[in-house]
Each structure stands twice: as C-alpha cells, then as structure tokens.
Image (tube, rainbow, N blue to C red; front, side):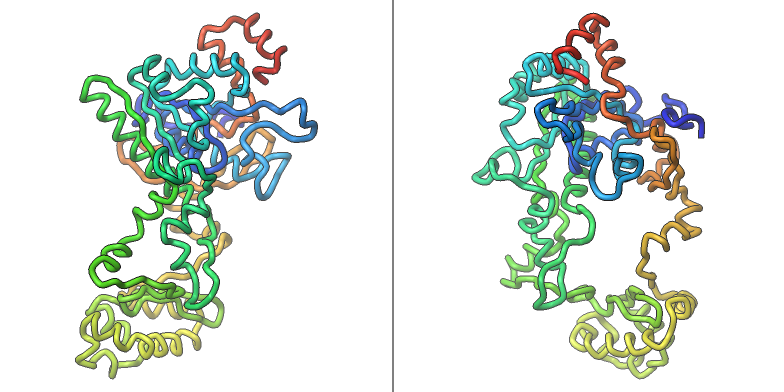
Length: 416
C-alpha cells in the first residue's frame, strides 16, 4: 500500500457515490456505520467531532469510539474500520460560531447524518426546516432510539435497548434462561443499514423528482423489528408468542447447532430431500425412510428425536470429519467460526474479505473487506481513519475561510 493516509483504489469516477458529500455528525455506532458504508462506495464523508474540552483535562475529545475496546498506539483498532474513508473536523457545536461553521458545511452537502437525541439539532438552530431553507436538496438521516415522534421519542435509547424493544432479545437465549446479546451491536448496525437504504432512496428520488431533499427517520427498535420475520403475523393469526429456542430454528427441522469433539457445527437439514441425505449420511436410514418425516410438519413433531440422532453422531467426530461427510452428502453445514478461524480461512482471503490497512499511527491492521461486491463500481478503502481534527483546516479552507479566520476560530477553542 502507498502511504498511511492514501490507499490504492479504483479511479474516483468509477465509485458509485463519487461526488456525494456527506456531513456525519453522529458518534459511536449507528450513524458512523452508515457513514462508513456510504464512504466505502465513494461518498466524501466529513465527520464533525467535538474538540477536547479544556474544562475536562485528561478526557480526550472526538468520537468516544476512538477509545472503545482494545487500544493500540492510543486508538481503538475498531476505529480503524469504522472511520476509514472519512475526514475529521474538530468543531465545537455548543458554540454559536461552531454552529455557523456547521451550517456553512451543510449548505454545500448532499447528506447530513446525525444520531443525537431528538431535539438536539433543533437546539442548535439546525431543524430540518431551517436546513432545507438553506439547502433544499439536503437529505437528512436522523437515527435515534425511538424515532422523532411518538410518546417515547425523548427517552434515551442505545442499540441494546432497540434489540430488547424490537423483539430480538426475547429470542436470544436457551429456553427459560436469561436473554443474551448477539455478541455485536446488531441493533446499531441494523439501524445504520436501514439508514443507508433510506439515504440512497432519497438521493435517487431527488435526482428524478426535481432536486428536493427529505428527512429519513430511523428508530433503532424499528430497524430490529423489521427483521423479525413472522413474529407479529404469528401472534396476530394464532395468538402465538414465539419463545427463545437456543440455537434451534423453531418450526423448521432439523436446523440446529450440534457438538463435535473439538467444536460445534450448524446443520440445516430442513429440506425434504436434504433430510433424507442427512439421515443416510449419519447411518439413520430408518429415519430417512419414515413416512411421517418426509415433510417439515412431521419432522417438527419429532424434532427432539431427530436432534438427538444428529447430536449423537456429531459428538463422536471432529468438526472436520462432520464437514467432510456432510459436504459429500450435499447437506448444508458450517463450522462455528472464531476470529482465528476467519483470519485463517482461504475463502475469506479469496474474496478479499481480509484486507491489510495501514493506520496513521505507524502500524497496519487486518480489517474486514467491503460488502456488497459490485462488479462495475466496487467499494474501496481510499484513506485510513483520521486523527481528531486531521482535516479541520483543509475542510474549512475549502469552505472559503481564510487562514486568519481559521486561526481565530482555533484561538477561541471553536476548532481543534
């Protein structure tokens, strides 16, 4: 790779979102993950972060994600993924002059992303109405816990709360045991991806319908609820409340996690013909030939017996032995991967899903590649994640401020 700041990439014009300017005013996960996604496909992402507060010595400024989880050379390695392809402007939005600068940047932008509590933008004099008067074509993405309307709008809400209210946490447990988190911030990332869909939809609408922008209102719990499949239809039609089922897939059999001598495998033998091949492969021709197991309804009625048969067979074998046998029988099965498994897997490597990214702190780190994969306008990593305020002067100069004006703002603590 070329330098810690600029990485090799496709020509700018081949990026799907080349020319789209995004102001990212969110922090932590939901808003910034949306910005990350848009940035990987060519959008220019200008991230506004709070400068360090002189009244709180020792407390770093910027997005708190810079200091979350494992830290290397003073910065979270998570930050290196979340903030690649972004420019950092350290701007104090609590000050009137900082708000003026933000409005100046927003006036020339295509998209604004924010994930503050509802009312925060309005308190800074940046209501959607005011911003659209300034920039009629602006697409405004607002991500919050409960949305911009409704009786809960003012309650604080993080992704984990959205997972609970959206119905997901009730299902992520073994029956009768405490609900557990998925293991990643899935509520935030689901909201971010819904936000990205909204942004792209609004940009397309703007292009074909006269250039008018609009507001996209994404609530964390609604993003989770949107992927809950038949949860509500089943309750509406039958009064059925789906309960936690551990690793099984209720109502579809067999589909579960099974123990091996050295790990776990997921086996999805829930197709009629797949089930017969699965039973033959594990030496249970009696179950393969059972008339009542030839369809899913019959298998669900005897799922405990089927799971016991599969589990007894896998428990006497290694993951590799199970995978080889079931692969040969054309039965969908997968090892439960750890980070080490992913990092060493040839398929991940062959599909460019493990990339080496230099940082601005003098080391390189392996990071996830880009999803989805577009044949004509693929995504790219063009710049590494910035230090706080790396691009403040450049961005403000591009906005028309003189060196003297920038220096005065810095002396007042408006920028860093």
